[in-house]
Length: 227
Image: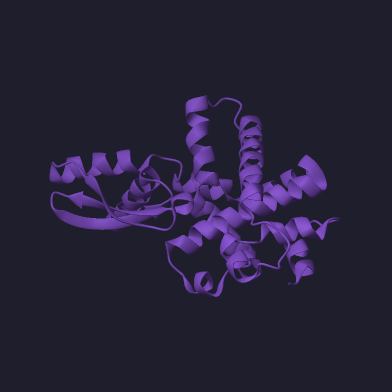
C-alpha cells in the first residue's frame, strides 16, 4: 500500500499510519485477511461524517451570512451527499487505495459509489484523529468546498423532485410517481434503485442509500433528459 502517495493527495503526513490504513479497510477485506490486524473503516466513517458536516456547515455559515437555515441546508446536502462524495473520491484517485475483497473489487455498480463515499468520510475521520480539526478542515475546504461554485452555478442544491413535478405537471398534466425497482446489499449498506414514472412509463432510475436519496437521483436523471 503506497500510503505516501495518498498522504500527498490529502495534504497530510500521518504520525500514526495505522489510522490511514484503517480508514481504507472495507469490511469485505477482513473476510479474506483475518490476520490484517485492524478493524474495518465504519467507525472512522461515522466520525468523518460528523466532522465533514460540521466543517461544511461552518464554511457555509460564514460565506452566506444573509442565508436562512432553510437556504443553507440544501446547499450543504448537495455538497455532502454520497453521489458528490463518490465523485470527489474518484477525482482524488482514492479508489486505488481502498482495501476490498476480490469479489467486492469486481463490483463496479452503485454499491461501489457508496464504498467510495464512505471511504472518503473515513479518511476525513482519520485526518481528524491524527491532525485535529485544522488538518481535517484544510482537506475538506480543498476537496469538498471547492465544489461549491459548481453546486451554485448548476443549482444542484435545488429539490430535483419538486422541479421535475412542476415541469411534468406543466407539460404533461400528470404527476410523476416513484417505485422501488430493487434493493441490494446487506442491511448496514443497502442500496435502493428507484424508478420515476410518468403514468406507467419508467422514464429514469436512480440509486441511493435510502429510498428518498434514490428518488432524488431518479428525478435528477429525468431532468437531464429534459435539458
